[in-house]
Length: 140
Ligand code: SF4
Image 1 (spheres, rainbow, N blue to C red):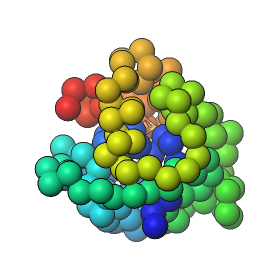
Image 2 (cartoon, rainbow, N blue to C red):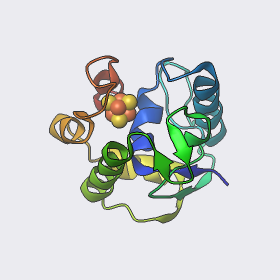
Image 3 (cartoon, rainbow, N blue to C red):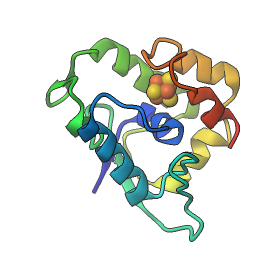
């Protein structure tokens, strides 16, 4: 089963072809397609309402497997920053570690996100202001 860390729920929706490496981008695309995460750029939508169970984890996840910043299990070269992103997503949307149907997880986040919440979570991310994540996240 795929493991997903909280802030990657946002990154999957905002993914628009950018990434740390070709391997990382391929991994991201595969996971978005596998769990049918809504993504406008890749034109993925869970129209058939498939139940895709994932494990929400507060450490390195299945997407991190191909990230060049992953140094070891639960060790990232931007550890403090990504941990803070996860903590903020968990706090804003009341998420706990455990098992979720991915589309329910999306509902918990996207039925409640606002521009202020997005800015609070993402403003420290290196991609903030580089990619147009906000446009993908705030308007479906
Ligand atoms: S700004 Fe960073 S953390 Fe936020 S959605 Fe974009 S890539 Fe993900």
